[in-house]
Image 1 (cartoon, rainbow, N blue to C red):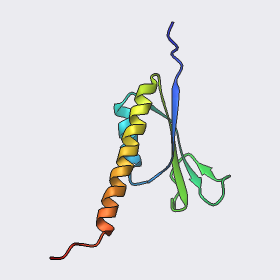
Image 2 (tube, helix red, strand yellow):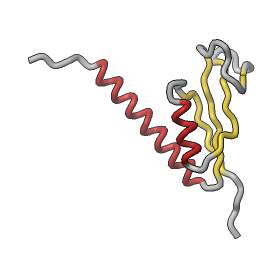
Image 3 (cartoon, rainbow, N blue to C red):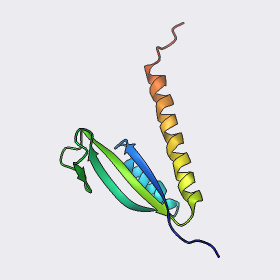
Image 4 (cartoon, helix red, strand yellow):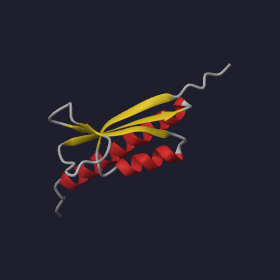
Length: 100
């Protein structure tokens, strides 16, 4: 008999520029957003379940669930690849241009 209990994946400190992308990828891959929170970087007791008026100084955390761990693993892979690509592109911008 198969266990149909949900599995969970928490992604912490997501850049606010890619939060919508994470939400879209989760929806496309049979995952549900169980919790989305804005947690203060300066006071761990301050946590909102909605975007605060001034979201600077907050980290965004998302808890995803799915009936199959492979969907969550795939989302984790895509997220890590996205971060890696962003880091690579940022390093390309910062590197000095070669002059001939």
